[in-house]
Length: 446
Image 1 (cartoon, rainbow, N blue to C red):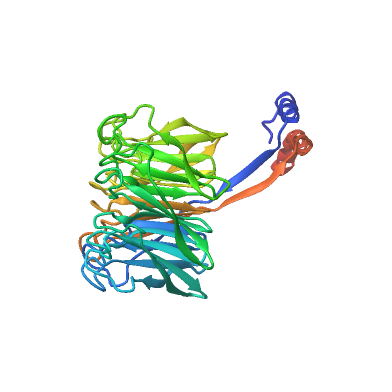
Image 2 (image 1 turned 60 degrees about the horizontal axis):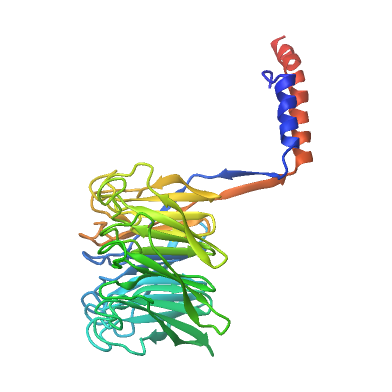
């Protein structure tokens, strides 16, 4: 404090007194990681292919699990016990079938878990199904198996899933209502304790190979559906569609989102995330920073109109990283997967953490605690509160592509806001200390 001068300290106090808004100080702890591993893991299980997290509960999809049949699939629920993340239960379909790929998509909210099985053969190969599980105490039980009302072979129903308190949204990227693999999305609403199909969504301008439904995200009144094969900006350029719930409870298309700088084979829309009036859309093959380096587009809704506000890149972007392959979003935090990043060996993978303070900026880069080549860390990623979960479906602990997942916990402590008067008092104290510091130094010197 002895270096403070009267002039500089008074200037600081006066400047703070002129502020119209309070100051909030935050302290962020270092990220702590926990590794989640499959029970009875085996080669090609792909544990970590899909992940979701809600508070102290996480779910990890394992579409290649062979417990019931070859690639019938599984999903594992983990909970945090105050010290570490532990397996609560392994979920299986009621009667899994070969190539059912149960666990290829997952969502979780409170005591409800939703698991997609796009290969379920209920109406022919790859017709698809979605399973709903409910938790009572610490036990999960199968509650429902959801099918499309117009189920058919190669619909890929369950390729993507999203959930709110009373709605389950399901992507069916192979639906042929608007042409081969044009895609569709289905809305199931909660009524009388169970979910029933309420609506089938199609893109207003849907066409063959658009893959509408390859990704999906939702909030209470909005759904965001990716169509990575859309051709507006060239074959495979991609798009995303925003739907809003009207007064009668029906979702209607609000707007089609396209990249301002989109081009051939960007695959914009392969991953989407939504929080309030903010949407993230991944374009993992964007070439602005190098071939297939990847990018993520940020859209903001004002009134009823969406507009592109930012295009995000990795600070250390490199060709082939596939940044934007996965995305997760909350009000102020986002995670973006780059599974082909090679910091720790070819395709070891990484995840980038972004934070918003009016604009989105990169704050950190995450890696597995035990990285290796071909882990594909970041193939899946999600954020919930202070926790981030990352899938690395290429991990080889139990054989090639057996997979793993990682949870990162970051605690941020907010110091109470300091009003203008408090700031003046604080710096007045500092000013007084600046005068006393030399005397204190002399006393210590005696």
